[in-house]
Length: 423
Figure (tube, rainbow, N blue to C red):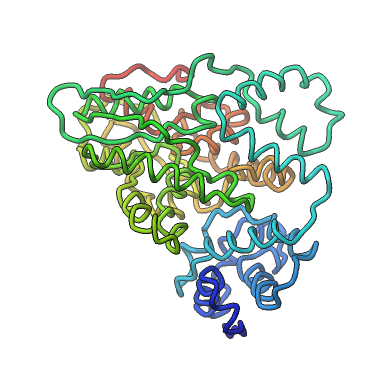
């Protein structure tokens, strides 16, 4: 693709990277076949190729975003299926993130839209505040039908029970037996409040396999939620890099993340701080050390299995299979653990969760959710396993079978308790 940025524009490292990404696109259209919004809507502007044209024109002209551009960029899930399909290696993730930042800097959204997005960026990364918000949601449920679609969607997705004491404080969890690895665990934000059992299962599983687990002081939200809303999260990223760097000086083999959306974000810290001379090297080191929990368990070798495990449909989260290129490892671990693992048809298509997407684009998210649930039902599973809390929350209400995190099943198979919602 030809571009026409000026030399002055190309002095900006973000524009320079956008130019490289745009020039890699050859207009082939392979991305349209795997884009969830294009599959649903059939609109070229709701495909990666269409959005690339919109972003190119907006950035080249250096003009404020228009309502049309905002509509179609907002409809993008950032599922990154297009990057898996693209034969030219177009880094759509970095391009659309740049486009979103430009939108937030140049476009004035309607008041309700602006308020909802700001509330999400403030509340979700703060577990204590998020817990209070969920408690308040209980009071609003009787009037759910009277609320705007976005607020109604928030109430529908809000869990009816909230863990009272879920937040993992900074501490060290010793291994069982001799130590094989020392890792830092990203405790997370939303996941701690919605399903504290995931972190507990992760701790048991890792410690059982000889891992010392550190919850490092000073590590907060990974920044993914606000980043995908177009906000500047670099100070938050720097704070996490500082905290993990202090822990690295004490010896650390990996940074473990058990929410794949967060993992994709942390693995991108090196790119986000590439132009910061004080942090570029440290951020690159953090990204290189970051592993999804399934990668670490595979490296350790799974100890134990169930004799006749139930039939499990593996839902491969987009942030895991497309964002981190990890697709087979969780399935292989589940099979080694004794489960009868089956793939979900159209597994490359997003379930509609996508961070805050199901809250901001409820109609499209609902259509994708129903499509995913039909595909899950077609393979008749007893349990559904997923590696991302957003997917678990999105699908749980309508699946008809338990949906649990992969680590909960691996923990159960190797000596831990059966997940609470598994009969």
